[in-house]
Length: 151
Image (tube, rainbow, N blue to C red; front, side, top):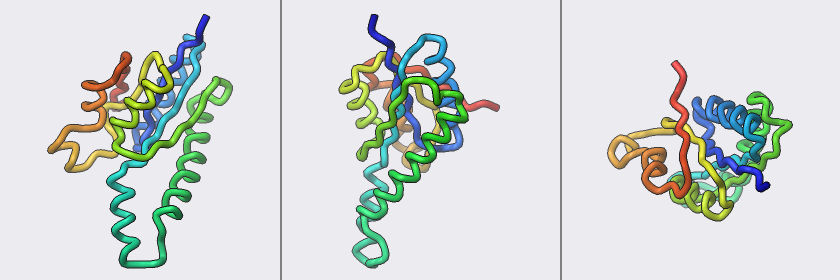
């Protein structure tokens, strides 16, 4: 029998640890494998690219390398704290528009479910155009479990 695969969208906001903990508990109960996915927002990459035009102290490649290393360390720590270290898991980092990349990964990896928070790294864009979570609700090709922030 094929193991269930649960994709966990992680943006490293203050809500991510709670989302990871819920996903780990679900995976333990269902004997599922976990696929943690983080997307480096293309908007941020474009901003750094603009800054590099005015200084030689930073490069886009250097920025991305440091960010990927930091997020990989942070993800390992988050999995440990969520009691998920013994579970089959993988961590993928993509670059682009977050909801589009999450949908793309869900399809490519043939996941059975997506787990994500209803809130994350939000800003004025989320208020004006809708949050990444809201866009995922409209476009996700598989069931999506949303984890609300705890009070």
